[in-house]
Amino acid sequence: MGVQARQKPKRFPAYHGHSYAAQPKTDVIRAQKTCGSLAFGGYLRVMTCSALLDLDGTLIDSYPGILTSCVAALRVLGHQPDKAPDIRQPIGQPLEEIMQILLQSYGDGRVGEAVAAYRQHYGESGFLGSVPYPGIRESLEEMKRTGLRIFLATSKRAIFASRILDHLNFTSYFDGIYGSVPSGELDHKPELLAHILSMHSLSPSHTLMVGDRRHDISGAHTVGMRGLGVLWGYGTRDELESAGADQLVDSPGDLAPTVLSMVNEKQFRARWQLR
Image (cartoon, rainbow, N blue to C red; front, side, top):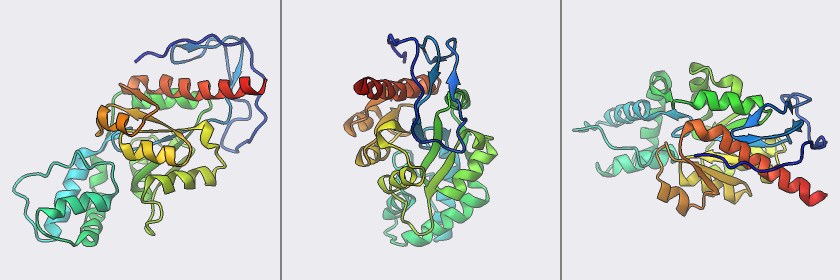
C-alpha cells in the first residue's frame, strides 16, 4: 500500500527531549532520503519516536516450529494426535491459552504440564523452525537507518525470542527484546507494553505498536499507544479492524514506509501544535 505524500516545511528545529545512550546523538537524515514515498526537504531530525514490534506473524512465520512443539507436548502427556492440529487461529495468544485449546478435545486440564513440555521441546529445536517474511529484513534496515528506536514486544518467552533473533541475525536492529517471563507478570500485551514504556521512558503518544492480532491492537490502546495491524500474519483484516487498528499494512515491503509515515505524522502534528 502506498503512502501519500504530504507537504512539509523544508527544515525542522532539533528536538531537545529525552536522549538515549543507544541512539545516535544526531539522527539527521539528508534531504534525498525518504520515509517510504514521503520525501522531506532540507534536514530532518527524528524525534524520540519508537516502534514496538510483535514477533510471530509480524516478523516471522513461526508456524512450523510451534506446530512441531505443540504435537511433541501432547505426546509427552500421553496423547497421540491422529493428524496435526490446526493452531493458526490461536497463534499469537499466550501459550497457556493455546495449550488449553489443544487439550480440550482430550478432556485434559493439565495446561501447566503441557506448557512445560512445549517449552522444553521448543527451546531445544522448535525455535529453529521460524523463517522471516520476505522483505522484513529490508524494512528493519530502513527503519533503523532513520534513527527510529525499535523494540521487540512478543508474548513468546523473551529467552526464545532472543535466540530466534540471534539465529536470523536480527538482533542488531533492536534496542531491546521483551517477552513473557517465568513469573507470568508479562504474559499479556497491556502489561508487557506498559513495562517497555516504563523501562525506557517512552512516550505512548510517540510510540507505535505493530502486530498481526487483536491482542496487539487492544494492548496498545490500553496503554495509550496507536496500533498498526499487519495483514500477512495469523490475524484477519476483520479481526484487526474490529480491534480498532489505527491503520493496516498489506505487505512486509510496505512496513517501513507505513511505520515511518505514522510516527512522523504524529511528530509533525505535535510540533505544529506548539507553534
